[in-house]
Length: 300
Image 1 (cartoon, rainbow, N blue to C red):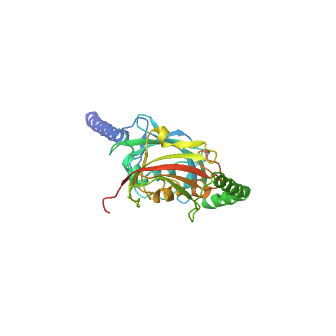
Image 2 (cartoon, rainbow, N blue to C red; image 1 turned 180 degrees about the horizontal axis):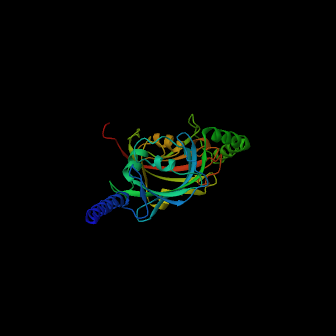
Image 3 (cartoon, one colour; image 1 turned 90 degrees about the vertical axis):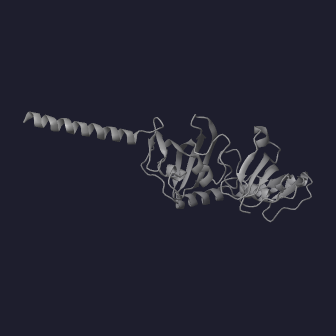
C-alpha cells in the first residue's frame, strides 16, 4: 500500500516539476527585469502612480518621453501632449500609453519597425536595423478627458488673448525693419528664396532630406541640424514629422533650393508654445531651410 502511494506521489511531483519548468520558461523574459505582454511588448514599472485610473482612447495625455537604444544610449527626449487613439495594430506604442496611470513611469521595449515604419511612417534611424527593438521611457504626467482638455484650453486662450495682438505688432515691425518686399501666403507664411532649386518638386510620400536652422525674430537660434551635423530625413506629408508651417514651406520648395521662411505662431507652435518650453506662446519664428534631396516614391 505504501509502495503504491509512494509511486503516485513521485509521479505527481514529477508532473508538478514539469509544469513549473514550463511556467518559468513561458514567463521568462529575454530582457532582464522586464515582463512581457501577449502582444510582445516588454515592460518594467519604474514608479507607481497615484491612482489606478488609466487613459482611454479619446483622452488627452501629457507625457515625458525618452527613446533609448537597448544599450541605454538616449536619442530623443521631449514632453508631449496629445489625444490618445485606439491601437491600430498589436504591439503598437499606444498600448504602452494605455497601461499607465497618472504619475506612473515605466520602460517599454518595442519593435523599431512597428514604431517608425507603421506608427510614424518614417524610415528607421541610421543606428537601428530592421528587426531591432528599442526602449521607450514614459512618465505619465496627466490624463484628461476630452471635456476637461477643452475647458482648460478655453480658459488658457482667454488668459493669453492679448499676446496674439502683441505678436502681430512684433511681426509687422520685423518685416518693416528688415525691408522685406514680399507678400505672405494665404496662411500668413513669408517665403524668401535664396538659392534656386533644380526643378524637382516635393510631393506627398516622398522621402526628403533637409538642413534647417530655426531662430527667433531677434536672431537667437533655438535649433539647427547644421550645428548637429546631421540632416533631417522624413517622409513628406506624414503625421508628427514637422510643424504645420514647415510642412507648407517645404512643399513650396524644389530640390537644391535654399530659402528663408517666416512663420507666424499659428503656423508654428501656436497659443501654447512648444512642449519643451523653448518656444513661448504666440511666437513668430524664422527658418532657414535647405532641401538637400528628394527621393520619389516607387509607385509614382
